[in-house]
Structure formats: structure tokens, C-alpha cells
Image (cartoon, rainbow, N blue to C red; front, side):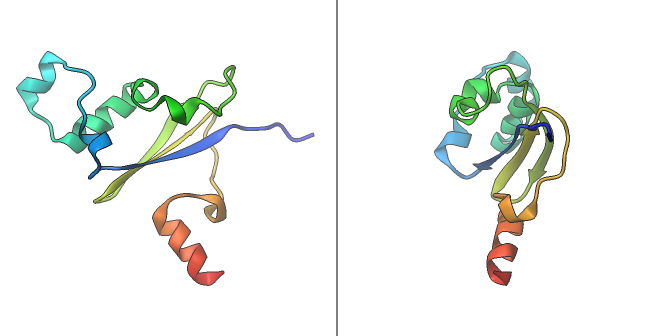
Length: 107
């Protein structure tokens, strides 16, 4: 029997009010003055996504440890690819707008 591998994609629209909210006030942030998008990326890479977006982890197996393996950055969104181990995501089931729209066009 093939083992079940937990995988998940999270699409965050960077122009939304959600992405503009500041959750963690770090003294180093005020010195560097990063953009909202850069701050959001740093929070995701530093493991604060679960604090910011607990709904993304609600369906996952509590025993499974989800790691961010890839972050795709576009002008209007960040796409996080998470899972227990790195593996390829089937384009047909992906929520990446570039893959999704291509698949819809050819279907």
C-alpha cells in the first residue's frame, strides 16, 4: 500500500487586508523597514504562518509536521507549498493561478 503524504498549498493575496496586518512587532523590523510583502514572506519562512492563519492547518493531521518547501512569489500573491516531505504537486490539482488557468483553458 502506498503511504499517504500530506501536502498543502496556501495562496495568500498580497494586496489584501489580511496580508497588510502586522502580527509580530520586532525591533529589527523598524530598523530595516521592510515592505509588507517582505515582512509577510519573513513571517512565513520563520514559522509564524500557523499563528497568522490557523485555518490552513485545521484539516492537516495533528501528528504530521508540515514544512514550507517552496514559496512562489508573483506580483499579487504568494503561493506556499507545504508538506511532510518535498514532492511534486500535480498541476491539475494545484491552486497556483498560472497552472490552474492553463488547465482550465485546455479542459
